[in-house]
Length: 466
Image (cartoon, rainbow, N blue to C red; front, top):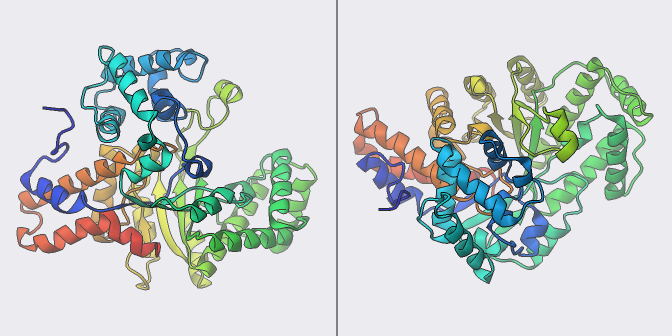
């Protein structure tokens, strides 16, 4: 019997019923990911399994480094086979790490391979995967279609021209691919030189000069409107914490002009500027009827030596330990008083903040829409069984699990869609266990089946108006 069988992660009869009869059949809406639009548009063909699996997966890179694998076999110049071999050697040591499950799920669901990856099976699995990747059925678009993905939202900067989204819309392949607005660079004034370069790029995209903060907001509104014309319905913000300092328009104009002149802002100026831009971003979203997402609590690029060698997003980020409650409540309270609070999803990277963000969300729900403001799925380091269960428990204890918009991949990989299956199996196991323990009524199975379907798909489709 294969390790990943039909009842993988489903520890009760009721969990199996919920999964197989309701969760498994639902399409996927991947409302937050980091797939490269160009690769989707060009229906990218991967050279081999090493490029597909290890080419940019810093989850795997961190694990390999922890297993004593030299950087030559991770981001270095070793051959594809040698890198894959090192991943296979790492696999047995990954037991109880989610990468062990994800790797076997991807082998099974993408390639139809049920053998356990190990040094003994590495060569045959390498050859079989590569042979399949050479066929049209394993190009980028086919990999997405394989998992019944209805909608994908990529992560895009306001200065992006969205040419590849346009191409995809003109050459549909069965999955809707739309942009999501990620304006983090527009508030990143801590490095004046790189910020000035970014403002010049944004000015070209907006077709106007940007000399003042008012110009900046006008340019961003133009780009916001353009994104909306391309189907965008949601934004995303990656923050250490929320920002809600008091400021005046005059102060923000002065800070912006000084940064363009090359002056590095002090801590107070940085806080004020971030507070102003974050507020103005939220206003734009509310006026457009978008949903906004806030990812809180990452501390990035911590290994200076390796950052200088490899750059960002290479496996040297971590969980931050910051206070986010006071500033978050001030931020959302200000928007509420102005009548400018959009649909909002909050994600935390530090599990200590699960209940903090959960109660923050429900402080500002106003009855205008079910789950208008809500606590999002386990993110990044919390995107694993324990993290998912804790997120579901916090959401259930302090809010409405039934209104949850469910899972996303937050991934750069075309083969991360089994994570939706993983999430759904855990969801069904949590609910099924409660039913069998008498914590939920077995007499309400019709509603519970609907709840599972809603969390898996319907809630996201309705929430984002896809």
